[in-house]
Image (cartoon, rainbow, N blue to C red; front, side):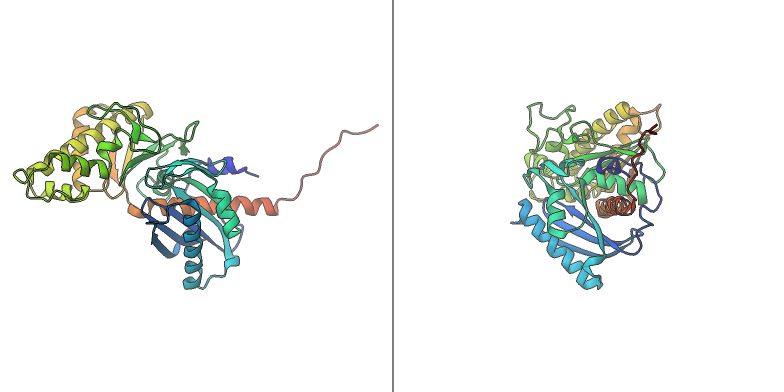
Length: 350
């Protein structure tokens, strides 16, 4: 039988993770800084229902658990699924997560969690087995199971939305690091970013320029009515849209963003020797950023093959990864319930 830690570190493959426990359902949860998303899936991993809610004013752990419980109830009711059919739940949190202990050590500044026993809270509230992981790690698992990284043993998933983070898969397994913080690339130092120390849980140097909020701040710093036809208060994706339409200031911000992202990707490729980088998140999946970053990387990386692609799952990457984690969790607990006790063999007595 697998322990929880070994189950969480199991090799990513494309086999059905749950076949022995019969009919049932699992719940996947994506806890975002501003939104909460749930999906109900059957034992083949197929999504049968979805639910979402804003987390505005409900960012404490207890409030999020209440929202999740409400979401689970709604999913079951509209799918006509009895609560007894739930086999497991898995949740992704936007921060450093101890998978073995089921504790969210620290989230981004949007939630501000510290040492939250999320797995125990879910199991207590719902009465079913639970598992937790970092949301970007789950997105990487999702891409490896059903997206752009199927069949790839070594790759990096880059989530660029409000902030930036990486899910690293090496030898077919998620790599989380000794302190569970592998992939926290928002704190990476590259040319052009601030070198001032930053505490975990607050925007890091790279995130300060490359995350969606950082790109907006850079735009506002450079903005003047004489330099652009765009408004001062626009989103990162709107800036990139403007760049595609020929706005010169937007093109400058796009080029800076792409160069900073290229620095990060190039340095990671040298350290990890990964052949594939997958761009995800609302900002990361913008075509202008992908093309501009690839163009820079092609100038630097002329000897090693490295592919840069956009996510095939889009915003569903985290949910798909959480579904497969929930299936693995349900399977592990099913095996434990059905594993006969082992007999202790005593030495032969004379």
